[in-house]
Image (cartoon, rainbow, N blue to C red):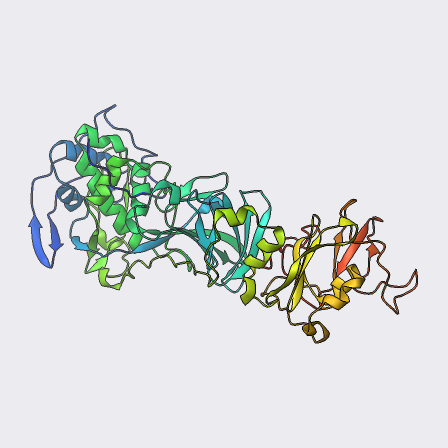
Length: 512
């Protein structure tokens, strides 16, 4: 049993046709460390033995390496280099450094990206926790709208716009464990990052992944991993070099180099990864085929009759090895400059107001230091607490929200003598970008339905100058929704922190 090195991906090639028999063998000059080596060896005609090997897909177009012929040749004792020398006469072997590749996931065309990882992930400079999913929609400016939910279909936790339209694993680097792989909601898992792009207004999903992680998924989809147990491990090595070269020579889209179907190479993510094909990738790390110093788009097929040598002058080429961009690590999510994490004991006794105050930054936030303890709202509708520059109000309906002092006066008229001097000036509380719906003008207010037993005080006397019944209600005054249910109107002259009611402001949660 061969050692297992963590890598993934498998690919497969485009439309395949029947190939003609292979004629002769040509040595392959290998460039290793700048030294040219002539690989020689007689490679005769290969015969396909019925029942001995079955291609993973159809016979194919017959150009370049025959996978079946490679199997037979490997069983006869020929090396991967000798196999490649036969099928790509005039090509050379070269080396590339660590790099990544962008793969268009065609099954995801015209769909949003919905993904999660058991260990959590990163998006828009923030962490996505275990059990949370990120949903990305591409924007015309090259960025994305991000919504994070509990599970794939749960409650919205926060949303934001970002100029980096990718979800990243929690840690950078190839060969990461399975709990860090990004999984499509209802679909398969992928190593590396997943992102979105627009192509002519259509949504596209891209997997940006380390090259050898990609190949670990490609190889077992293009060749049978159990060939390693049948004396044909060198065929798997040859396939790894051909697939690596083909992928690096691709340049199909502005947003991705290649795709994941038979139009390019079959790449189903991690679902088919196998230690035997992963070992073949690791045993050829960085090795590519070159023509005139450029990476060869080394076509191949299943060709059951063994295939024949290709005219590599008819194949496209890609960049030179030294033109490739080295793999960039995933960005590190910023560490928020807040107080140390509270102890479990402290969290156990924390109220929803305390939680919201800690979330927005505590004493360093815009509302400043607390003034006095939490107090009950009239009719036991909820609680509130005063701070230097604002108030946090908490009810079952509203959750915990920051409001201005004038709103509190409408709810609790006799609290005036407890307000700090700052209450007389212009509101000082500011809202993080994106915390209020964009189509709500300052001062317009947001209506929040009040549930029975959780009402904002209905007996609060209206302030002086309030409109008579039938007139338009003033901001902050109790009113009626279209359904007849009472609502509380929280003015937005003092922007609101905290989770808004999803019924009236979908996706706006926690001021994020």
